[in-house]
Length: 262
Image (cartoon, rainbow, N blue to C red; front, side, top):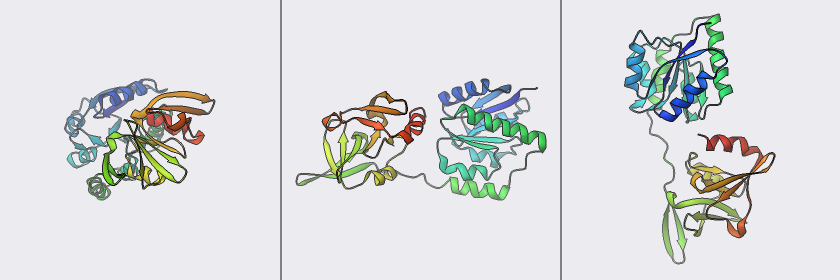
């Protein structure tokens, strides 16, 4: 069986290296024929007859723009597997006839399933051509301004109002009917939001809802300990009131590990 020729388009070198390593460990033979960090580099490789990939592993946000621009510049003849950390693009990606969509951090078994799907499609029928009308719609939607998350919180300190930048916040904790903002310096301030509301307002790449009572920033998690077979304990800095034990909810453990490994 001839190796499956894969072209990696990824603007994060560590992510590209990890993906190449995952491809080498696949049950089917896979050859990485090239890597690129930008739309321009990807275009050059795709125009090179010597590259001729069987599959394109394509991140959406690249160093010089959105990878969707590739489909404006040239005819992409090989199937595409989109890879990205932003699931809001999932539906749009599928509309340009991708083979699959993988959310970072990419799980080895999901990559295997996507490649097997590609092989099966190659054996049964030729890949469908890209739909130009749908692609135009994808590009228009993808160019919409990125969502902005909250950058500061206004809190009351005595008779004064104080703006606390998000960068100064270690975690939020729900205490009875109040929500407390904990700064890296150890200050505790009341905010007029529930943890449910804060989950929407804060960047999910930076903050994670550990359980019903805690929403923490990644940099505030100093240690993680196996508490039981299915639970994890997090050590937060600064320490919670009364050295409260902060456990990751059982149903969140798997998602929490993926969030840490992104």
